[in-house]
Image (cartoon, rainbow, N blue to C red; front, side):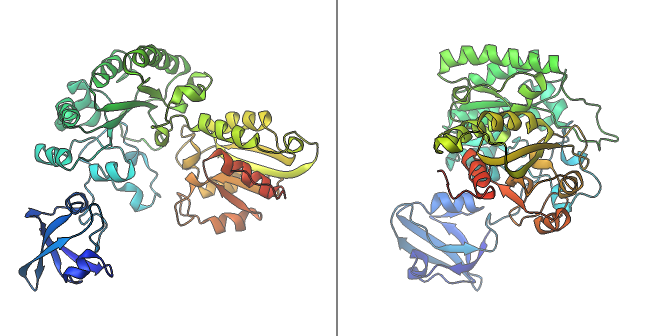
Length: 441
Protein backbone atom coordinates (compact mmCIF):
# COMPACT_ATOMS: atom_id res chain seq x y z
CA UNK A 1 0.00 0.00 0.00
CA UNK A 2 1.30 3.45 -0.94
CA UNK A 3 -0.13 6.97 -0.96
CA UNK A 4 0.57 9.61 -3.56
CA UNK A 5 2.08 12.81 -2.17
CA UNK A 6 0.40 15.82 -3.75
CA UNK A 7 2.40 18.56 -2.01
CA UNK A 8 5.41 18.94 0.28
CA UNK A 9 5.38 21.90 2.68
CA UNK A 10 8.16 24.37 2.00
CA UNK A 11 11.08 24.15 4.49
CA UNK A 12 9.49 21.12 6.18
CA UNK A 13 11.60 18.11 7.29
CA UNK A 14 10.30 16.19 4.28
CA UNK A 15 11.27 18.97 1.86
CA UNK A 16 14.75 19.32 3.34
CA UNK A 17 15.23 15.56 2.98
CA UNK A 18 14.37 15.67 -0.72
CA UNK A 19 10.90 14.10 -0.83
CA UNK A 20 8.93 15.45 -3.81
CA UNK A 21 5.32 15.78 -4.96
CA UNK A 22 4.47 12.71 -7.04
CA UNK A 23 6.40 10.35 -4.76
CA UNK A 24 4.30 7.64 -3.12
CA UNK A 25 4.64 7.17 0.64
CA UNK A 26 5.13 3.48 1.42
CA UNK A 27 6.71 2.98 4.87
CA UNK A 28 7.82 4.85 7.96
CA UNK A 29 10.41 3.13 10.14
CA UNK A 30 9.70 -0.07 8.28
CA UNK A 31 5.95 -0.03 8.93
CA UNK A 32 3.47 0.05 6.04
CA UNK A 33 1.19 3.07 6.20
CA UNK A 34 -2.50 2.22 6.08
CA UNK A 35 -4.00 5.66 6.58
CA UNK A 36 -3.68 9.04 8.26
CA UNK A 37 -3.84 7.44 11.73
CA UNK A 38 -0.65 5.51 11.03
CA UNK A 39 0.94 8.55 9.44
CA UNK A 40 0.23 10.81 12.41
CA UNK A 41 1.35 8.27 15.01
CA UNK A 42 4.55 7.19 13.26
CA UNK A 43 5.70 10.67 12.23
CA UNK A 44 5.55 11.93 15.83
CA UNK A 45 9.00 10.50 16.50
CA UNK A 46 12.30 12.41 16.30
CA UNK A 47 14.11 10.03 13.96
CA UNK A 48 12.40 8.60 10.91
CA UNK A 49 13.27 6.41 7.99
CA UNK A 50 10.75 7.32 5.32
CA UNK A 51 10.44 5.08 2.28
CA UNK A 52 8.78 6.40 -0.85
CA UNK A 53 8.27 4.92 -4.28
CA UNK A 54 9.76 7.14 -6.98
CA UNK A 55 9.08 5.99 -10.52
CA UNK A 56 8.18 2.64 -8.95
CA UNK A 57 11.50 2.17 -7.15
CA UNK A 58 11.85 2.39 -3.33
CA UNK A 59 13.90 5.31 -2.00
CA UNK A 60 14.72 5.73 1.69
CA UNK A 61 15.19 9.05 3.50
CA UNK A 62 16.68 9.42 6.99
CA UNK A 63 15.00 12.36 8.71
CA UNK A 64 15.58 14.05 12.05
CA UNK A 65 13.09 16.56 13.43
CA UNK A 66 11.54 17.78 16.67
CA UNK A 67 9.19 15.37 18.39
CA UNK A 68 5.60 15.83 17.14
CA UNK A 69 6.73 18.37 14.53
CA UNK A 70 4.83 17.84 11.25
CA UNK A 71 6.70 15.93 8.59
CA UNK A 72 5.22 18.17 5.90
CA UNK A 73 3.54 15.77 3.48
CA UNK A 74 0.10 16.34 1.96
CA UNK A 75 -2.09 13.75 0.26
CA UNK A 76 -5.02 13.74 -2.15
CA UNK A 77 -7.39 12.46 0.56
CA UNK A 78 -7.24 13.71 4.17
CA UNK A 79 -7.79 10.17 5.43
CA UNK A 80 -5.43 8.70 2.80
CA UNK A 81 -8.09 6.02 2.19
CA UNK A 82 -11.84 5.73 1.65
CA UNK A 83 -14.55 5.94 4.30
CA UNK A 84 -15.44 2.63 5.96
CA UNK A 85 -19.10 1.84 5.56
CA UNK A 86 -21.65 0.34 7.92
CA UNK A 87 -22.38 -3.39 7.76
CA UNK A 88 -25.36 -3.24 10.13
CA UNK A 89 -29.11 -3.33 9.59
CA UNK A 90 -30.20 -1.48 12.71
CA UNK A 91 -33.87 -1.50 13.63
CA UNK A 92 -33.86 2.29 13.96
CA UNK A 93 -31.39 3.33 11.24
CA UNK A 94 -32.10 6.98 10.48
CA UNK A 95 -30.71 6.71 6.94
CA UNK A 96 -33.34 4.09 6.12
CA UNK A 97 -36.00 6.62 7.18
CA UNK A 98 -35.00 9.45 4.87
CA UNK A 99 -37.56 10.89 2.46
CA UNK A 100 -37.10 10.01 -1.20
CA UNK A 101 -36.00 13.54 -2.07
CA UNK A 102 -33.07 13.55 0.38
CA UNK A 103 -29.66 14.26 -1.15
CA UNK A 104 -27.53 11.21 -1.92
CA UNK A 105 -24.72 12.21 0.43
CA UNK A 106 -27.18 11.82 3.33
CA UNK A 107 -27.68 8.17 2.37
CA UNK A 108 -24.07 7.18 2.96
CA UNK A 109 -23.92 4.83 5.96
CA UNK A 110 -20.48 5.37 7.43
CA UNK A 111 -19.19 3.46 10.46
CA UNK A 112 -15.54 4.51 10.53
CA UNK A 113 -13.71 4.42 13.87
CA UNK A 114 -11.15 6.88 12.52
CA UNK A 115 -13.88 9.50 12.19
CA UNK A 116 -14.87 8.66 15.74
CA UNK A 117 -11.38 9.62 16.87
CA UNK A 118 -11.08 12.70 14.70
CA UNK A 119 -14.64 14.04 14.64
CA UNK A 120 -16.45 12.42 17.56
CA UNK A 121 -18.72 10.33 15.32
CA UNK A 122 -20.35 7.33 16.98
CA UNK A 123 -19.40 3.90 15.62
CA UNK A 124 -20.52 0.36 16.42
CA UNK A 125 -17.16 -1.50 15.95
CA UNK A 126 -18.93 -4.28 14.03
CA UNK A 127 -16.63 -3.76 11.03
CA UNK A 128 -13.45 -3.69 13.17
CA UNK A 129 -11.37 -6.89 13.02
CA UNK A 130 -9.19 -8.13 15.87
CA UNK A 131 -6.14 -6.92 13.96
CA UNK A 132 -7.65 -3.48 13.48
CA UNK A 133 -8.66 -3.36 17.13
CA UNK A 134 -5.04 -3.98 18.08
CA UNK A 135 -3.98 -1.17 15.75
CA UNK A 136 -6.32 1.19 17.64
CA UNK A 137 -4.55 0.19 20.85
CA UNK A 138 -1.07 0.36 19.36
CA UNK A 139 -1.70 3.84 17.95
CA UNK A 140 -3.21 5.04 21.26
CA UNK A 141 -6.39 6.21 19.53
CA UNK A 142 -8.34 7.71 22.41
CA UNK A 143 -11.02 8.69 23.19
CA UNK A 144 -13.47 6.92 20.88
CA UNK A 145 -17.25 7.29 20.67
CA UNK A 146 -19.04 3.95 20.55
CA UNK A 147 -22.67 3.11 19.81
CA UNK A 148 -23.40 0.35 22.30
CA UNK A 149 -27.22 0.32 22.36
CA UNK A 150 -27.10 -2.73 24.66
CA UNK A 151 -24.48 -5.15 25.98
CA UNK A 152 -26.55 -8.36 25.92
CA UNK A 153 -25.00 -10.14 22.89
CA UNK A 154 -28.24 -11.71 21.66
CA UNK A 155 -30.21 -8.50 21.98
CA UNK A 156 -27.47 -6.44 20.35
CA UNK A 157 -27.39 -8.89 17.44
CA UNK A 158 -31.13 -8.34 17.03
CA UNK A 159 -30.95 -4.55 17.34
CA UNK A 160 -27.99 -4.12 14.96
CA UNK A 161 -29.03 -6.88 12.58
CA UNK A 162 -25.65 -8.60 12.38
CA UNK A 163 -23.94 -11.43 14.31
CA UNK A 164 -20.82 -9.26 14.44
CA UNK A 165 -22.59 -7.22 17.12
CA UNK A 166 -21.98 -10.04 19.62
CA UNK A 167 -18.29 -9.19 19.94
CA UNK A 168 -18.81 -5.81 21.60
CA UNK A 169 -17.95 -6.55 25.23
CA UNK A 170 -14.69 -8.42 24.43
CA UNK A 171 -13.79 -5.50 22.14
CA UNK A 172 -14.50 -2.92 24.82
CA UNK A 173 -12.58 -4.90 27.41
CA UNK A 174 -9.59 -5.12 25.08
CA UNK A 175 -9.72 -1.38 24.46
CA UNK A 176 -10.05 -0.61 28.16
CA UNK A 177 -7.21 -2.98 29.08
CA UNK A 178 -5.11 -1.33 26.36
CA UNK A 179 -5.53 2.12 27.88
CA UNK A 180 -8.12 3.37 25.40
CA UNK A 181 -10.94 5.51 26.78
CA UNK A 182 -14.36 5.75 25.15
CA UNK A 183 -17.71 7.45 25.46
CA UNK A 184 -20.78 5.30 24.81
CA UNK A 185 -24.32 5.86 23.67
CA UNK A 186 -27.53 3.85 23.73
CA UNK A 187 -30.31 4.71 21.32
CA UNK A 188 -33.25 3.35 23.29
CA UNK A 189 -36.43 1.87 21.84
CA UNK A 190 -39.47 1.40 24.10
CA UNK A 191 -39.74 -2.17 25.34
CA UNK A 192 -36.64 -3.37 23.47
CA UNK A 193 -33.37 -2.24 25.02
CA UNK A 194 -34.58 -0.24 28.00
CA UNK A 195 -35.73 -1.64 31.37
CA UNK A 196 -33.74 -4.72 32.51
CA UNK A 197 -31.63 -4.62 29.33
CA UNK A 198 -30.57 -1.05 30.07
CA UNK A 199 -29.87 -1.95 33.69
CA UNK A 200 -27.48 -4.66 32.49
CA UNK A 201 -25.88 -2.32 29.97
CA UNK A 202 -25.12 0.31 32.60
CA UNK A 203 -23.78 -2.29 35.02
CA UNK A 204 -21.41 -3.86 32.49
CA UNK A 205 -20.17 -0.61 30.95
CA UNK A 206 -19.59 1.15 34.26
CA UNK A 207 -17.34 -1.76 35.32
CA UNK A 208 -14.87 -0.93 32.52
CA UNK A 209 -12.19 1.61 33.53
CA UNK A 210 -11.96 2.89 29.96
CA UNK A 211 -15.66 3.76 29.74
CA UNK A 212 -15.98 7.48 30.54
CA UNK A 213 -19.68 8.12 30.01
CA UNK A 214 -22.93 6.73 28.62
CA UNK A 215 -25.49 8.88 26.80
CA UNK A 216 -29.10 7.71 26.63
CA UNK A 217 -31.00 8.91 23.55
CA UNK A 218 -34.61 8.09 22.62
CA UNK A 219 -35.10 6.55 19.20
CA UNK A 220 -35.68 9.06 16.44
CA UNK A 221 -38.47 8.11 14.04
CA UNK A 222 -39.41 9.92 10.85
CA UNK A 223 -42.62 9.70 8.85
CA UNK A 224 -40.89 7.55 6.20
CA UNK A 225 -40.83 4.05 7.72
CA UNK A 226 -42.79 2.06 5.19
CA UNK A 227 -41.65 -1.58 5.26
CA UNK A 228 -39.39 -1.06 8.29
CA UNK A 229 -39.58 -2.58 11.77
CA UNK A 230 -42.55 -1.28 13.74
CA UNK A 231 -41.26 1.13 16.37
CA UNK A 232 -42.78 4.01 18.31
CA UNK A 233 -41.65 7.02 20.30
CA UNK A 234 -41.56 7.07 24.09
CA UNK A 235 -44.70 7.80 26.04
CA UNK A 236 -44.23 10.20 28.99
CA UNK A 237 -44.48 7.45 31.62
CA UNK A 238 -41.94 5.32 29.74
CA UNK A 239 -39.52 8.22 29.47
CA UNK A 240 -39.90 8.79 33.21
CA UNK A 241 -39.08 5.12 33.85
CA UNK A 242 -35.83 5.50 31.89
CA UNK A 243 -34.95 8.61 33.88
CA UNK A 244 -35.75 6.94 37.20
CA UNK A 245 -33.55 3.95 36.36
CA UNK A 246 -30.71 6.18 35.20
CA UNK A 247 -31.00 8.39 38.29
CA UNK A 248 -30.54 5.39 40.57
CA UNK A 249 -27.33 4.53 38.74
CA UNK A 250 -26.19 8.16 38.62
CA UNK A 251 -26.37 8.49 42.39
CA UNK A 252 -24.59 5.19 42.94
CA UNK A 253 -21.84 5.77 40.38
CA UNK A 254 -21.19 9.32 41.56
CA UNK A 255 -20.32 7.83 44.93
CA UNK A 256 -18.39 4.83 43.56
CA UNK A 257 -16.64 6.34 40.52
CA UNK A 258 -16.76 10.06 41.17
CA UNK A 259 -18.90 10.58 38.06
CA UNK A 260 -22.59 10.17 37.33
CA UNK A 261 -21.49 8.28 34.17
CA UNK A 262 -25.06 7.96 32.80
CA UNK A 263 -26.38 11.05 31.01
CA UNK A 264 -29.89 11.02 29.51
CA UNK A 265 -30.36 13.38 26.58
CA UNK A 266 -32.50 16.51 26.77
CA UNK A 267 -35.16 14.74 24.70
CA UNK A 268 -35.82 12.24 27.49
CA UNK A 269 -36.50 15.01 30.01
CA UNK A 270 -38.74 16.84 27.56
CA UNK A 271 -40.67 13.68 26.68
CA UNK A 272 -41.07 12.84 30.36
CA UNK A 273 -42.21 16.35 31.25
CA UNK A 274 -39.36 16.66 33.74
CA UNK A 275 -37.25 19.81 34.20
CA UNK A 276 -33.80 19.86 32.64
CA UNK A 277 -31.25 19.14 35.42
CA UNK A 278 -29.01 21.90 36.80
CA UNK A 279 -25.59 22.72 35.37
CA UNK A 280 -23.58 20.55 37.79
CA UNK A 281 -25.53 17.44 36.80
CA UNK A 282 -23.75 17.45 33.41
CA UNK A 283 -20.23 17.60 34.87
CA UNK A 284 -17.92 18.43 31.92
CA UNK A 285 -20.66 18.20 29.24
CA UNK A 286 -18.67 15.47 27.49
CA UNK A 287 -21.78 14.17 25.68
CA UNK A 288 -23.15 17.50 24.53
CA UNK A 289 -22.82 16.61 20.82
CA UNK A 290 -25.28 13.78 21.50
CA UNK A 291 -27.91 16.24 22.71
CA UNK A 292 -27.02 15.82 26.38
CA UNK A 293 -27.20 19.12 28.25
CA UNK A 294 -27.53 21.38 25.22
CA UNK A 295 -30.43 23.31 26.68
CA UNK A 296 -28.93 23.59 30.16
CA UNK A 297 -25.60 24.83 28.82
CA UNK A 298 -27.40 27.35 26.60
CA UNK A 299 -29.31 28.63 29.61
CA UNK A 300 -26.20 28.76 31.81
CA UNK A 301 -24.12 30.57 29.21
CA UNK A 302 -26.91 32.96 28.29
CA UNK A 303 -27.47 33.84 31.97
CA UNK A 304 -23.75 34.35 32.62
CA UNK A 305 -23.50 36.64 29.58
CA UNK A 306 -26.74 38.45 30.45
CA UNK A 307 -25.42 39.26 33.93
CA UNK A 308 -22.59 41.23 32.28
CA UNK A 309 -25.09 43.69 30.80
CA UNK A 310 -25.72 47.03 32.48
CA UNK A 311 -28.68 46.96 34.84
CA UNK A 312 -30.76 49.09 32.47
CA UNK A 313 -30.33 46.47 29.73
CA UNK A 314 -31.50 43.59 31.92
CA UNK A 315 -35.19 44.29 31.99
CA UNK A 316 -38.12 43.91 29.66
CA UNK A 317 -39.33 47.03 27.89
CA UNK A 318 -42.77 47.54 26.34
CA UNK A 319 -41.29 48.61 23.02
CA UNK A 320 -38.45 47.07 21.10
CA UNK A 321 -37.32 45.61 17.81
CA UNK A 322 -39.49 42.64 16.88
CA UNK A 323 -37.27 39.58 16.53
CA UNK A 324 -38.08 35.92 16.02
CA UNK A 325 -36.34 32.69 16.93
CA UNK A 326 -37.27 29.66 14.83
CA UNK A 327 -36.46 26.28 16.37
CA UNK A 328 -37.66 22.69 16.64
CA UNK A 329 -40.70 21.86 18.72
CA UNK A 330 -38.72 20.23 21.52
CA UNK A 331 -36.73 23.36 22.38
CA UNK A 332 -39.45 25.97 21.98
CA UNK A 333 -40.85 26.16 25.51
CA UNK A 334 -37.42 26.05 27.12
CA UNK A 335 -36.03 28.91 25.03
CA UNK A 336 -39.22 30.91 25.51
CA UNK A 337 -38.91 30.60 29.30
CA UNK A 338 -35.20 31.43 29.20
CA UNK A 339 -35.88 34.69 27.40
CA UNK A 340 -38.58 35.56 29.91
CA UNK A 341 -36.16 34.90 32.77
CA UNK A 342 -33.40 36.99 31.19
CA UNK A 343 -35.03 39.80 29.18
CA UNK A 344 -33.06 42.23 27.05
CA UNK A 345 -34.18 45.85 26.84
CA UNK A 346 -35.00 47.00 23.33
CA UNK A 347 -35.72 43.50 22.01
CA UNK A 348 -39.21 42.06 21.65
CA UNK A 349 -38.51 38.39 20.92
CA UNK A 350 -41.00 35.69 19.97
CA UNK A 351 -40.08 32.01 19.76
CA UNK A 352 -41.63 29.85 17.03
CA UNK A 353 -41.44 26.09 17.41
CA UNK A 354 -41.73 24.68 13.90
CA UNK A 355 -43.28 21.39 12.87
CA UNK A 356 -41.02 19.21 10.75
CA UNK A 357 -42.93 18.26 7.61
CA UNK A 358 -39.80 17.09 5.77
CA UNK A 359 -38.96 14.22 8.12
CA UNK A 360 -42.30 14.04 9.93
CA UNK A 361 -43.86 15.55 13.07
CA UNK A 362 -42.11 13.12 15.45
CA UNK A 363 -38.76 14.71 14.53
CA UNK A 364 -38.63 17.71 16.84
CA UNK A 365 -34.97 18.77 17.08
CA UNK A 366 -33.90 22.15 15.72
CA UNK A 367 -30.96 20.85 13.70
CA UNK A 368 -33.24 18.92 11.34
CA UNK A 369 -35.48 21.84 10.36
CA UNK A 370 -35.25 22.44 6.61
CA UNK A 371 -35.30 25.62 4.60
CA UNK A 372 -38.70 24.69 3.21
CA UNK A 373 -40.27 24.32 6.64
CA UNK A 374 -38.61 27.52 7.83
CA UNK A 375 -39.82 29.64 4.92
CA UNK A 376 -43.36 28.22 4.84
CA UNK A 377 -44.04 28.50 8.55
CA UNK A 378 -42.30 31.82 9.15
CA UNK A 379 -43.66 33.60 6.06
CA UNK A 380 -46.41 35.52 7.85
CA UNK A 381 -44.50 36.35 11.02
CA UNK A 382 -44.24 40.05 11.88
CA UNK A 383 -40.57 40.58 12.74
CA UNK A 384 -37.48 42.45 11.63
CA UNK A 385 -35.20 39.40 11.55
CA UNK A 386 -35.29 35.65 12.21
CA UNK A 387 -32.65 33.83 14.22
CA UNK A 388 -31.89 30.14 13.61
CA UNK A 389 -29.26 27.78 14.97
CA UNK A 390 -26.20 27.15 12.83
CA UNK A 391 -26.95 23.43 13.29
CA UNK A 392 -29.64 23.79 10.59
CA UNK A 393 -26.99 24.64 8.00
CA UNK A 394 -23.93 23.04 6.46
CA UNK A 395 -20.72 25.04 6.37
CA UNK A 396 -21.71 26.28 2.89
CA UNK A 397 -24.93 27.78 4.30
CA UNK A 398 -27.25 25.15 2.82
CA UNK A 399 -30.20 23.56 4.63
CA UNK A 400 -30.88 19.81 4.64
CA UNK A 401 -33.33 20.16 1.75
CA UNK A 402 -30.63 21.94 -0.33
CA UNK A 403 -32.23 25.37 0.02
CA UNK A 404 -29.54 27.98 0.47
CA UNK A 405 -29.62 30.58 3.20
CA UNK A 406 -29.76 33.30 0.54
CA UNK A 407 -32.85 31.68 -0.97
CA UNK A 408 -34.52 31.51 2.45
CA UNK A 409 -33.79 35.22 2.96
CA UNK A 410 -35.23 36.02 -0.46
CA UNK A 411 -38.43 34.06 0.21
CA UNK A 412 -38.97 35.55 3.66
CA UNK A 413 -38.04 39.08 2.67
CA UNK A 414 -36.06 39.71 5.86
CA UNK A 415 -32.71 38.69 7.35
CA UNK A 416 -32.24 35.12 8.58
CA UNK A 417 -29.30 35.11 10.98
CA UNK A 418 -27.59 31.84 11.94
CA UNK A 419 -26.53 31.80 15.60
CA UNK A 420 -23.84 29.63 17.19
CA UNK A 421 -25.00 27.30 19.92
CA UNK A 422 -23.29 29.14 22.80
CA UNK A 423 -25.42 31.33 25.02
CA UNK A 424 -23.29 34.41 24.47
CA UNK A 425 -23.68 33.92 20.70
CA UNK A 426 -27.43 34.22 21.05
CA UNK A 427 -27.27 37.22 23.37
CA UNK A 428 -24.81 39.06 21.12
CA UNK A 429 -27.04 38.44 18.11
CA UNK A 430 -30.04 39.83 20.01
CA UNK A 431 -28.01 42.90 20.97
CA UNK A 432 -26.81 43.39 17.40
CA UNK A 433 -30.27 43.06 15.86
CA UNK A 434 -31.80 45.38 18.44
CA UNK A 435 -29.30 48.09 17.56
CA UNK A 436 -27.21 47.99 20.72
CA UNK A 437 -23.47 48.56 20.51
CA UNK A 438 -22.86 46.47 23.64
CA UNK A 439 -21.31 43.02 23.25
CA UNK A 440 -20.51 40.37 25.87
CA UNK A 441 -17.82 37.72 26.02
